[in-house]
Amino acid sequence: MRIIAIFGAILLQASLAHAGAVDDCNQVRDLNRQLRGCTAYLKMGAGAPQNLATAHLNRANIYAQRRKYEQALKDYASAIALDPLNPLALYNRGNAYFDTRQDELAIQDFTRAVELDGGFALAYLNRGIAYERRGDMSAAAEDYRHAIALDPSLEGARRRLKRLPSQ
Image (spheres, helix red, strand yellow):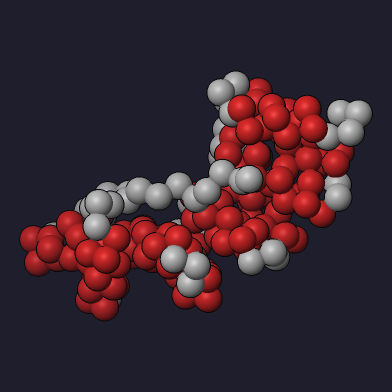
């Protein structure tokens, strides 16, 4: 079992004119409200690129959670185009690729996420799971070790590493 995408809004900076949609897009208690808020904010078409990227990312995470992967992948692509240095967008898109059994694309996104943030333990863990599913036990073990070194509390990485043959 891989670690699921990080769900949680990243605060958008709001002008007073956009406060309702921004507030809705940023809250995480009511996913329907969040989806409506992010969609409304994006329809306004105004905002800093990073804010628009965050709205796409928040909406993509909802779509992915609901297994609407085609919509999720479109929003992840938009988020990454607007904010290409955001490792969270790449990580979450990697999870969507993993969920749709597109392991090579998942590995590419997890790799880019750790290139942008070398301390992103969950990206190492999930890349290791993707490698393991592809049969590359050596790469999987390396990623599990790296994830554990970064975050010793990742018991999933420890269990997976122990299960690998002669690792």
